Image (cartoon, rainbow, N blue to C red; front, side):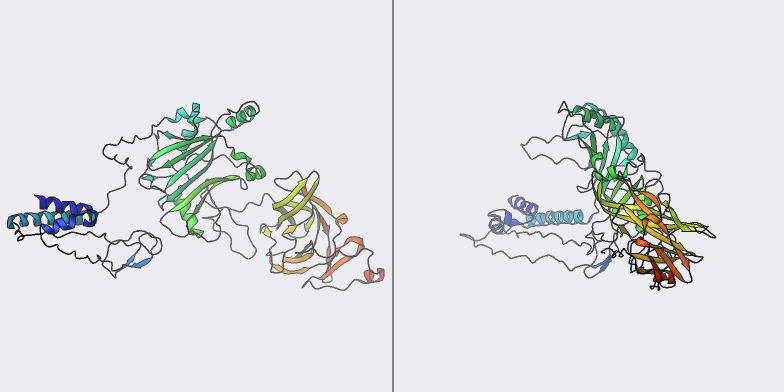
Length: 554
């Protein structure tokens, strides 16, 4: 029986070199030492996912990213032959034939068991169990869980293991959107006015779920804050260091739920302060499931991958909540979020000559923020007006003094065709994309076919019929704001407004004339924007006392 014990020991170790003296003892008894080699694995050359087993040289298609990979030859490494030591003295005893037969059958049975265990399919995912403690060591106890109601009076800092009744589905197929109502209920057990801040999840599959039972890398996070607790913390901060917790984070990972309480206030971040709060957060995901979010994002250019990162956040600029989706190697253009209420993305700014946005994926563009500019527009049929929007601003304000630049968007609206954007050209736009002054004059002039707009050193002409840009040129001279009507454009995140003085010009005899400071005028051919000669009256009057201002630096 000693030979049998030595052979089994050598097989369990996977290599007999791990046992000092075993090769010699095996050789003395006529046993062949065993060396086990691991079977080579094969993964996808693009996404590193495991591939189905196939013969060497076969081309296999990845079931995740559809990439083709040729299976390597692999094979077992050559086994070194160990020298058989010579017996010290006397003839070597002959092994018992019956015992050799028994050992051979045992060896074949063990090898067959190893082969079967390697080739059999993997078991279905299950909730991971705590590892067994080594002999003689104390067993590792699972963390003690508490009900969500215990969070309301908890003074612990750090992670708290929670009981998690009511989760929709299972940890092995967890849907972050469908569990919004569950997470909100847990947060309301902590504070009955809890408000959702964000949801983050990694490892989300195309079916909208992720594995939180067996994976040690996937997780889901829900963040909440309590307005009432924030107000109480602000009041107590002046007299006590024991302010109440104002924020709650729920972390789902490896088959469990952990909670953390802290005093960080998300409302101090600049974006929410500047643009204002978004609308009420969603409390359930049935209306716009993650499967639909992924479909829309895929149509917008999201690359196909086995798993994604998703985030549900409030976008205060549009006043609503939206889902962002990304992949590890997603280096494409930024995609808009998909709104949680409508399952659609906000429509991009329409451009002249571009097809309208797909109504199945995009919402109608919201023109309501544009303000009409007094004195700018075109009479006739149909009458049209120029409207503007301060879409972003970068400035410094010290008292009443302000320095900065403002990005403007301009539209012409009126008639049945709806508004259209005054588009850009390679030479630039007029009005310009950035205005560096709080009081900016601009001028318009119209006839039955065209609208001319000039501002900040450029002039451009568009077709009234379809919004096509006809020409755009540099325009020297300073428009006279005193001759125009002033409109104050709202500037978000500011205590002031941007003043736009609109000056009316005229088109006659193929020439557009725009008034400048000092009594002069800018004259351009309406057909191509080329400089036009001065009128006889201007030639008789001579040059203006006020020299025209040079155009601003780009």
